Length: 327
Ligand SMILES: C[S@@+](CC[C@H](N)C(=O)[O-])C[C@H]1O[C@@H](n2cnc3c(N)ncnc32)[C@H](O)[C@@H]1O
Ligand SMILES: [Zn+2]
Image 1: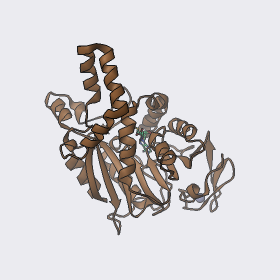
Image 2: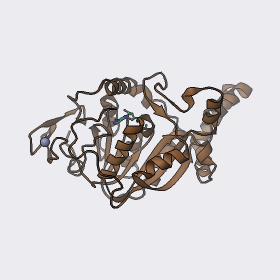
Image 3: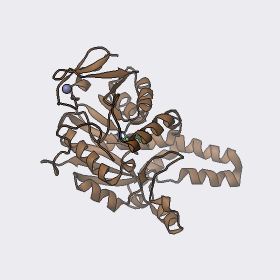
Image 4: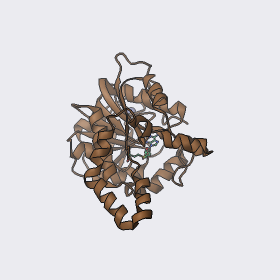
């Protein structure tokens, strides 16, 4: 697989920041000669990384669930989330990054529908193999790397998205990731980033004694850390590094709960008809609700448009990263 020049040009050797050249099977550093192999269409900076135990365990769980994860998205969710991310990124001219891309539903949308040259970056190799397959023929490079130490040049990107990933970083890592994003974005370029919303429903759950409503170490049977943030908390964290331009609530209909209720009163035909409606037209009503301030308190996700401050608000943490940052 040949890597596109424009995509390879924004990357650097994490050891010494040297240029990378495509030799057909790897990206080779022109300074130190180190080879970063292409594995089933994925350029890997982590192929021989010696990871802290916690990272290795979380990564293994991501690898194990990659196929399942790729299968869980009903059409209406993609019809909401994919354009919502792209809109908040603005109109980038140049290479964009999809950070924590997983198997690539956002990456594919950016490249196929909007024709943006896109780097899909994740630390799950198995997820990226799926991404590489679904994005064959598109201007996409799948990059196996850690979001806390990006192998990307300063100021090289025209925009970035990160969907449903930020909430999986622990507090100290969330700051690192934001700093890395700010470092690699061009001045004023935008990042569209989501976090699970600590919305009214989850606050109620917490009041009823459900500790996991706010934060926990296991999700959907896997061992991942996650945190739900209030709009105020999310804005405060983002503001430490970025200028926050917008913050909205998305996925405002509790579609699954409505579907379950409809099934109880009218059976699977009624709930099936409702889901078909949501897939074909109902998602538009959900998107319309994003405009009202209440959405920030009911939406399943918070979506922020943040832009890189000039000058950077905080110094980059990774002058010459030694490898993936620990947790
Ligand atoms: C819930 S998935 C979201 C995938 C995709 N953005 C989407 O919306 O379908 C979260 C992703 O973040 C990735 N991730 C978690 N920690 C990461 C890290 N330190 N570096 C890179 N990716 C990471 C996981 O491997 C996983 O694929
Ligand atoms: Zn090098």
